[in-house]
Image 1 (tube, rainbow, N blue to C red):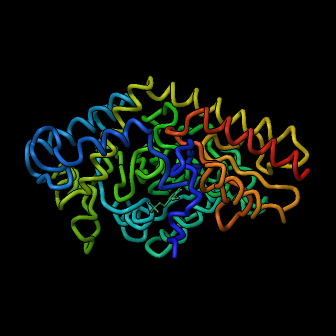
Image 2: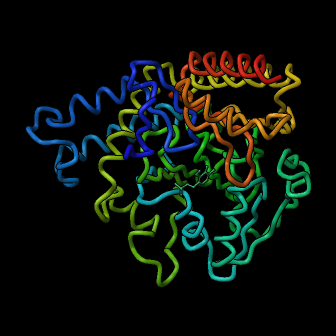
Amino acid sequence: MACSCFPEDRPAARGGERYNFAAGPAMLPPTVLAQIQDELPNWQGSGLSVLEQPFTGAPFKDLMQQAEQDLRALLALPPNYRVLFLHGGASCQFALLPLNLLAPGQSADYLESGHWASKAIAEARRHTPLNIIASGRDNGFTALPEPGEWRLDPRAGYCHVTSNETANGLQLQHFPAIQAPLVADMTSDFLTRPLPVERFGLIYASAQKNLGVAGLCLLIVRDDLLGPPRAGLPSPFSYALQAEQQSRLCTPPTFALYCAALMLRWIGQQGGLAAMARAGRAKSQLLYRAVDASGFYHCRQRVADRSTVNVCFQLRDARLLPQFLAEAQRAGLYHLQGHGAVGGVRASLYNAMPLAGVERLLGFMHDFERRHG
Ligand code: PMP
């Protein structure tokens, strides 16, 4: 019996182009995939795979240092920020943020902007009191509360935002300068646009969308927030202890780190964050314009808050969705189903998605509409 992971009519197997619109783990640039494949058996002439490198050896330490330097250059990161390469996903940080940044009983501010902010809030609540500064729940998370509406608590230890709501297709366009350290979950739009880094106390992002593969969480933290961890916090989860040990307090996720290093280099070669932002706007605008112009598809998200990386839309006749998704996959357009909590279609257009992928999707959408509209 054929395994459902490898359908026999998979277009790639027949030599056709394939585009992966998954929200994550996401598409990698073909040149990065090819480099991984090429040098896998013998990394940098060491005679061993990168998978077998000791993390304390000079070659791997150099790789970590180079990755950090490339990241610093891309973001123009000021020297008072530290870069940590941590295990686990952003979900682990949902719990570790209050345990690292707050004194027992101290509260934090949270913006409830969608599915992932709600997850961050639910987890943080297990460890600390918190204040919801504003919520999009009443509009079904189809629009973001304006920063002018945020009810900030002057005693908050930090203020947490989700820069891009992956499931809901909403993205913060601006980051206000506020008094409390601004902490951002940037898992889905990290390195897709230039950032005013100095407005943030801490930024974190799982790697599997714009920065390679799963298993690594990248964290950027301002020096002064690396205080003593709460009593009882296991050492590998302490930002301060990990910073002291250059993210080598325990074995870091070496393969994911190697992939992140390749992605950082690739982003630089493409022209850096300004180029990523230009490409992201071009790809997403093409899709939003087509959806808005059509009576067959529609997008519920408020125009000003729409995400450049997760374009979410619906088919007006929802009964056609399973057929849309199945035909798309046969055409080499993979993983277009919306998040389970939201439904519909979601096209994730991370850095590695070329404009040609969006054009192929548009061609398919027009054809599907012509046949079913
Ligand atoms: N935050 C956001 C915005 C996300 O999109 C995701 C994953 N889709 C997460 C957090 C959770 O990441 P992980 O599964 O790596 O913990």
